[in-house]
Image (cartoon, rainbow, N blue to C red; front, side, top):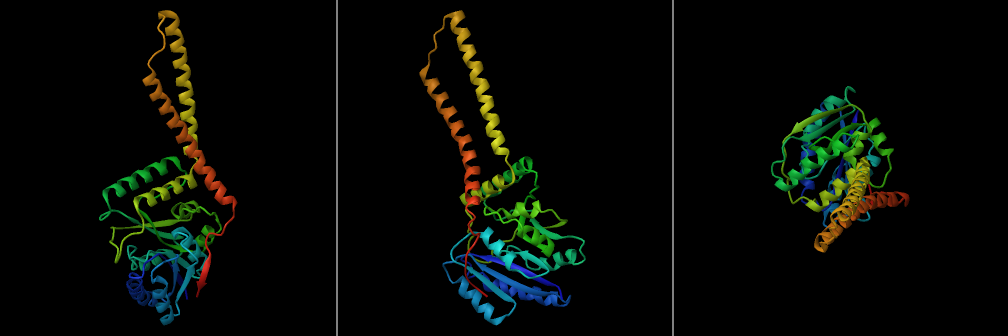
Length: 310
């Protein structure tokens, strides 16, 4: 019988777990008619509330429920990787426990992959209703930017929620990089993907753990992981300013020799110095980001550490 593994990263989600499991039981009943079994793998990403206790309660009642508990918070990317690595299903999906990923869509997704017509079925939000305007605006800007500078296409509104074949999962697991950006990795490995659209759904309980700064850093990780365009841009800026400064020097020399006009205006000179210093620091910072990611990769530290599991 085909098995679908459901990977569920959790961080301080004690209130959402029971609601999520109730919905998954409904999905299981429908999938049983197609002779499909479920495996649910909760990943406790170092929660400091009663998330792990809630997971254990469900695990005692059902053999299909497994869990991994990290020694500390390693982040959602590490939790997703652990779940994919621990999964045993013929098909694997990653879902948020807050029910923003509609569980019933798994049934529709399975219809596309069971006959091997597609290797993966992903979902994308066609609206961002309920999100702050600023976050939605910058999200759209990010997708437009990264699709222009990266060779890997990023689908606007795409979620981590997708049903993948075992072959595709193994391809993702083969990339053991420490700095992970799964949205990009899923697209990087290729395979034929079907996209399903749905409208944004509010969380069943609690508030999102992502703030604007966290999403900004995550977006930077995505850019650094899938394109070196910022380094090229920094180089081009440097060349342009060198040319501009060379032309300005020649202009000042000619002006002084012909019209005997002494160079003056220290306030404007100070402003120019500050401006150029800012450009230099900006370009140095871009190089520093790439260097820091390389430094972290060379350490070969584990992506996650397990404290206990079932």
